[in-house]
Amino acid sequence: MKKPGHVVLLIVGIVLSLVGFTLAAAGAVATWLASSQNDGSFFTSPTERYTVSSRALVSPQLDAVGEGTPERLPFDVGTLRLRASATEAGREVFIGIAPQNEVDAYLAGVHHTELREVKFQPFRPVYTDIPGSSTPATPGAQQFWAASASGTGEQELTWNIAPGNWTVVVMNADASDGVSADLQAGFRSDLMRPAAMGLLFAGVLAILIGVPLLVLGAVGLGRGGGPPGRPPSTSAAAQGSTPGSTTSSPLHFTGHLDPALSPWMWLVKWFLAIPHFFVLFFLWFAFAVTSIIAWFAILFTGRYPQSLFHFNVGVLRWNWRVAFYAYAVGGTDRYPPFSLSRADYPADMDVEYPPRLSRGLVLVKSWLLLIPHLLIVGAFTGTATWAWRTQDGPAGVINDRGGGLSLLGLLVLIALVTLLFTGSYPRPLFGFIMGINRWVYRVLIYGALLRDEYPPFRLDQGPADPNPQQTPDPDGRTIQP
Image (cartoon, rainbow, N blue to C red; front, side, top):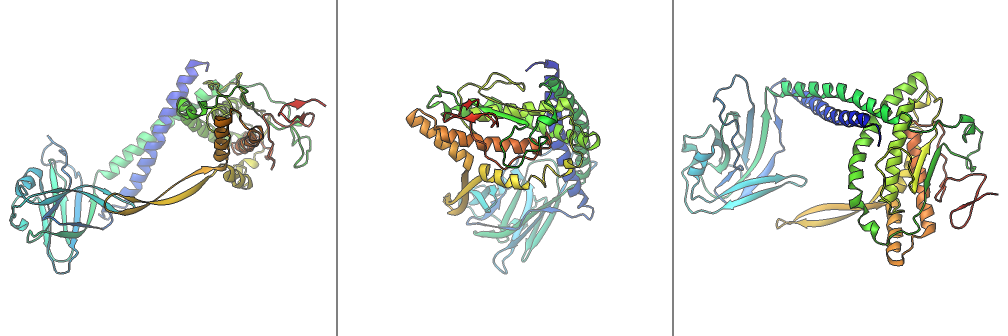
């Protein structure tokens, strides 16, 4: 990839934009949540049942919170609210919060249970049983609790969070063994709103800096990134072609099967392509941002900015090379180049630049008009899921699990397994796989606003685009008439 300065601008812009969108989204959600606290309400967890056979249930041992800070702070760090009710009617429950060292001394030699973590969906607490034979004094008689509550029915305590190491303890009020209680935790803080506003401000600032840098980098990389497109009169739509006819397309999409394809190389291509997957993640983000900018440009000017056009086509080209190499075809062993530009590679694609685009179509083409194609492409590339159930751990919890493979993925897998055992990639299957990919990319360029010609409902198979002046032979090559 040339133009190192534009590469740096693109990278910095992508990173800042990603961080900005993440912070802004988190800040917006946190601001909305903070607004719900105007009435002093708490964010609460679901009420769940915890049952242990020991004399006490204690929370995980926590690291120091605010160690070294003054005991009194000029602002409210947060308030914790705990609710507990015994599952056995008429039984008194005790719940308290105390310094961790005091709880450790109180329960030394006592059979108790530590709650290690809680798994949800389905709910399942994970415990650590700590054996002991001593009988503790009743918890209500102890003086070290920072906050506590006991009695029958639902008990509630609130505690202003303070620096130090703290532990939550749930027991029967008489310190007997066999604790079973329904528990709920709640939290609120005066810091929520300023923290949320800080996240939102930082996110917006990062976006305001990152997006222009991203666009400048994309413009620089896209400038001169492709030859000028042919006039619209040469396109299928401008020639007045009828649906279903074999005519030229603004998308030039090729993929030629490697004649010396290794039977086993495809087993490791997923691993070898990881650097490309990493780069493409960021490039697709840049593609989304520049497509939004292009949407506004088309709406107000009727033109797709040419530099951004060639950049986005370059992203699609890069993605197609990696797909052809690794997962969507597996048709070559040549490692894809790290480049947005056209190169000497078995898989290639290009899109003719349109001098003008419809300002009206841009409002509906990416979603409404594409619905029929999205349904078809979804059938080709969507995952068909198989579900099964497993028993998770000694508790016997039944979990639903699933997995699946798309039709395209299944066909590629069949072709590659055939290659492994026969040394030959089935050419009819290769042609069909190429047809699916060609359909997908036609839909992509239309949905990405790159062209106004509606994609044909046609599965054009083979390594090269169909041409009315050429006739394919049985080997997939073309013969001039």
